[in-house]
View (cartoon, one colour):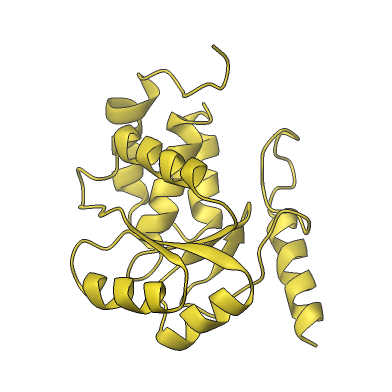
Length: 185
């Protein structure tokens, strides 16, 4: 039953991309980690995006092969979570995203640097998952070079709702004017 639910979730996520350009990097079964039942959990490109995990969620994440937990919260519970994550043998990274200034191309690039420095599946969270979704929308624009609408669609797929206006305001001022990060010299 669980594998059917995971397959259905992956198919639904991939199905959300209907009509999108084929070069987008939306989830596929081969590239997705397994779902951990954190609040508002969404699988995306080898990452689990969502709300704050419990200790049980962190244990489940470890058992499913997650290696790095990225906490976007600004203060609440950071030290306690760091201790739990490290006790469980995973890597903890704190990338606080203060609103509204933390929604920026600079923060999106910092996230990409963290992803590049670590291996395995990632669990990226804030309190509810919406800041994580907003940051992924900015990553799509600032790092991957997607236009505003494509970036917002990425964010919506990951749970962007209340912060959409803030993301749209951040894109032109903080991101689209900057050149996207490129692997080419």
